[in-house]
Length: 447
Image (tube, rainbow, N blue to C red; front, top):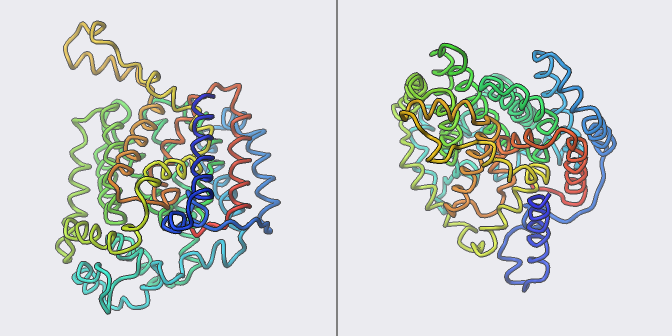
């Protein structure tokens, strides 16, 4: 409870400070409803009613259903609930504003899709168009990401599914599948009970506001399945190299969707440490295969990264004050993960059950085996994702919009809700739902 109250105070202060600061400081934030990137505009939409109904049903029956359903039925039910929740929240803003038109603005990927006539040429010349103030500079989001992100929407257009509605549908489907990937990873790590406890919280995640719809939702889904494939490939009595290789391919593609997803190596390492590091070599081969494919196509990841840092400081990042966003980012993240997740944070270190030095009376290998038997997978992945999130914050390359940008980390932090006492689950789900509904109806988000 103390952590939840502290998180609530952080959010309140983050909303209040811009309101009481000088106009110049407030304008320098470039977020009218800071710490959330959007505008203050109380509103309702035809998604309001369905969202309220979904929230009531999941909060009331979610824990019991998650505990009783067969595993193979739990996964699609969780996905369906997450999809319904996210789509209903999007429809609070209306079909065009909340869904079909989200990815069609001049800053977004679809704005550039029509100009890509030759994919190999685009890849070869991608880095040359990253910096701003050139006649052919990429738009904000395309320039700020590796070419894999644009490539996804070009491929979607090439197969006849062009336009904002199809792009948003892809992001919604893949983004909400991250909740299923988390469950798969937890079960593969020997924590099915934790997975079942987390399922209602993942289905009713406040992050759904930005899962529907942003390209970062797609990124979150891809790397979530990378971690899930790694856990599944390393789990069981014998490793499954093919699954581990697939995990590496997904990780590799992930870093060509978003430079910051290199930090997903932290949750991946946590899973590998829990299940066995020696068998991860197929994942390294898979990731290297993707890196080789992009490099041979003419795009070198490190060149793109360094140019993006320059582009970042060509824009409003030079004006947005670190003095606010270094902690305002965390307040925005609380809005995406919810107070229930914050309430579980203090349980994470204790659930890892790391023995004191005096308790270890064995070889290092035996000590690691003992630790693995004690460690709680849900706590480990949540703590690892939180670590990655904090590293992203300290990098200084994320000032604002982190409720969207950090979705790939958020879904794993939400897994920490599995540690909450079962008797409190309904109450915390209600808190999650109320907070999400208030945000969705009071702020008109930009993503």
